[in-house]
Length: 66
Image (cartoon, rainbow, N blue to C red; front, side, top):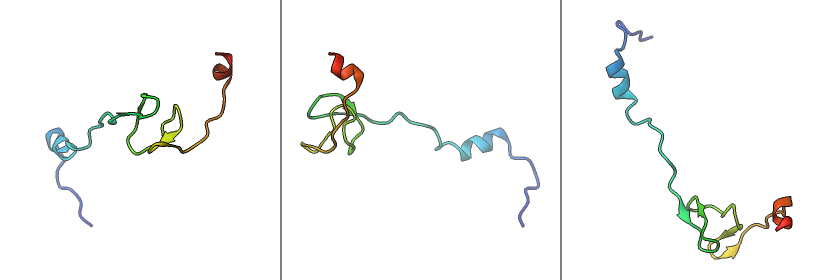
């Protein structure tokens, strides 16, 4: 089994992990309600996807109060 002879320096460790940075997810505008959503996902605000109602959203207490 291979065992390292020497400690890996912080610089080499950073070079190896250079591509592991987190990125902010890209958001697109919903065609129906114009809220921001993830591409290729059902809109969490209105439930529409590709020009049709994909899921029926439940009514909450804040929705019925307005």
